[in-house]
Length: 145
Ligand code: TYD
Image 1 (cartoon, rainbow, N blue to C red):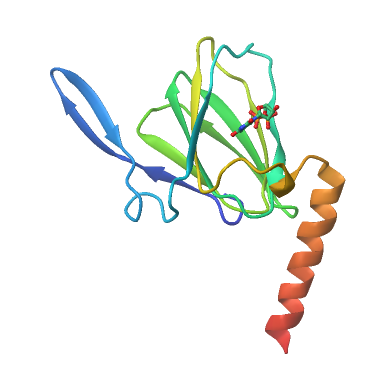
Image 2 (spheres, rainbow, N blue to C red; image 1 turned 90 degrees about the vertical axis):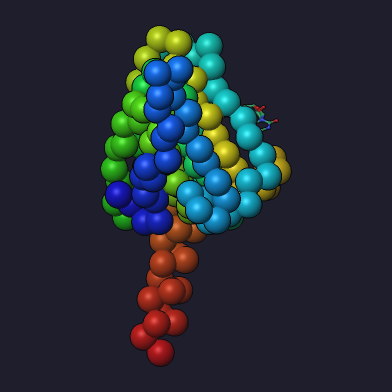
């Protein structure tokens, strides 16, 4: 996957009464969860996300149905299909994400490290690209000193 994203298998408790999946801070996610939101009533051809974050960390879960997350760190891209309530996708800072191909009735749950803050967003892809590439260049220069 693209840096610094990864999929996480959540612990599942399955018994004849049904299934239960758990997300715990410090165990499944390394950030404190400060906000929870979810996407629902989504037209199947919709595109959600289409932004990047400067600092925000998130965990994305398809709690019902399935959808795809297109990830782009400014250098490489990857598409992850989320199709199970016990699988989560960690998306770190400076990653552009598009959420696409929602199945009918899909529900996307998002756990986030901060409260809603519009100034943390890149809404413009070329702004995101310029900053993420400049940041990588700076890191490279620092590590070569
Ligand atoms: P938007 O960022 O377009 O959603 P997505 O990431 O799914 O594409 O947000 C849609 C609207 O909801 C926009 O007016 C901002 C508002 N919003 C909040 O007020 N709080 C939140 O936590 C989020 C995620 C969005």
